[in-house]
Amino acid sequence: MKYLLIFLLVLSIFVISVTLGAQNDQQVTFNYLLAQGEYRISTLLAVLFAAGFAIGWLICGLFWLRVRVSLARAERKIKRLENQLSPATDVAVVPHSSAAKE
Image (cartoon, rainbow, N blue to C red):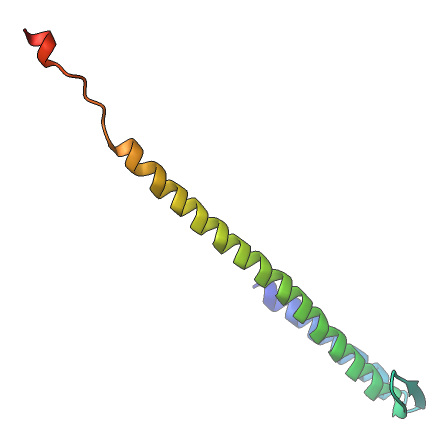
């Protein structure tokens, strides 16, 4: 539910930016690293917003993946240590009672 609300918020921001950009049909010169181009402001806003959104999701996804791998590794280590500990605690120490009976 939380992710749906976040998605709807981002989608509404995107729609608002495209709508506001569509009101301004002015051509602008956009200088990027290798070249330069003439674009409408609405197109430029939509493309740059989508690119920023995709890059942000990619970076967050990589951090999430790193945390999940670290968590899985820690859970495996805990399970291995618990397995090493449990055989030692399962063996009950029984004192020799034969000397006490005699």
